[in-house]
Amino acid sequence: MKRSGSSRLESVDFHAIGISSDSENNPFRITQRQLDQAAEILKLDPSIHELLRWPLRELHVTLPVKMDDGTVKIFHGFRVQYNDARGPTKGGIRFHLEETIDDVRALAAWMTWKCALVDIPLGGGKGGIICDPRSMSQGELERLSRAYIRQVGRIIGLEQDVPAPDVNTNAQIMAWMIDELAFMRGVNEFGAITGKPLALGGSAGRDDATGRGVSLVVREAAKLLNLDLKGARMVVQGYGNVGSHSAVLLAEMGCKLIGAADESGAYYNPEGINARDLQQYVRKNNGLMKGFPGLGKSIAPEALFEIPCEVLVPAALQNQITKLNAPRIQAKILAEGANGPTTPDADPILYERGIYVIPDFLCNAGGVTVSYFEMVQNAYNFYWDLETIHHSLELKMVAAFHSVDEMAKKFKVHNRLAAYLVAVNRVAEAMKLRGWA
Image (cartoon, rainbow, N blue to C red):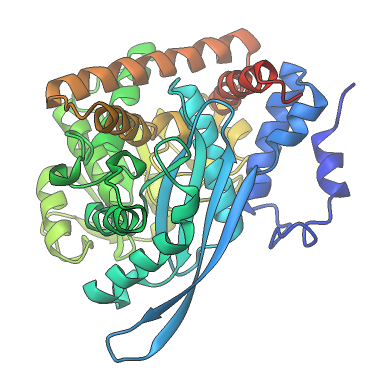
């Protein structure tokens, strides 16, 4: 029995099930279409396929928070537990003014595939709060963080669902959250939240884990393509944690940063931009690169992707590479540091043009991998040194990279579809063994 993914989507009343938009760029619909393609190739059992198209559980919360001026402001948040067939769900919490439930659903789905792809015994989850953290004081952020845990704390834990930092959240916010959870339960369960400060059971190597993972898979791709990274030109969109660490670590491998962009602007300098100095400047300049000497000339943001280079790292927002600009990209390797930067209709174009795409849930899996290591260390109350973390991360990332490359060659498909084939097959196997279908 074959089920058409497109016809199935057309038959669903999206508003009735809480999907806010049936737009082609709706991130959750994108994840469903990508899954449908993999399911058809894998000849997935229809019931497993249908179950994998939806989150198993999601919680919507309303959060009253007292602001510094004495008023009470109401915030809305979410926690989605997408699939736990392979183990407790795992995924970050983001604070963003434009957060939606469909964003969180999509990110939780990608976390499911990401954990399966790097072969760690976890499922996928994600959380978010609709807010503008840059307009809030530290006291307001703390009260918001604690309010969120008071609502979602009942469904998280080391053996249930383990949050972590994501967009606009950090180790300090995780510290407030784990403290609130400890107060609620009367016990310290440090493994219930990862990305914590080292003093509260955090892991060495967590800060640059995602960027380090990006650099490792770029290195492996360069080997396959016989591309020498020494002197290779690099362009990075987004210079936050992921983008900046990717740039710094790739620069250590010999790459030259010639283009960079963030919300303050896009810049091009063919002579090279010092990646580490720029990272330090951004940290001291409210997260923005504007004003850094040596950025070169200012260019239109959309022109960044058209700069000739060997390595392009989109590490900012979703839906940045589309069928409109994919024909103009001049990179040899496209390493997706962000979640969902490439739309489905751009993938075939990039594939036909011979651009080697390292898909997001492979490329940026370093963060969740080291978060898993943090969970293991918390469970044993025994902590690893930085060398052990780096070595273990490299083993996971390299193995995942080659599993995707082998699947792409076997089925003659682009790398994103190959990554889905690897991940979906692993999750489906766990579901069958548990008797879910």
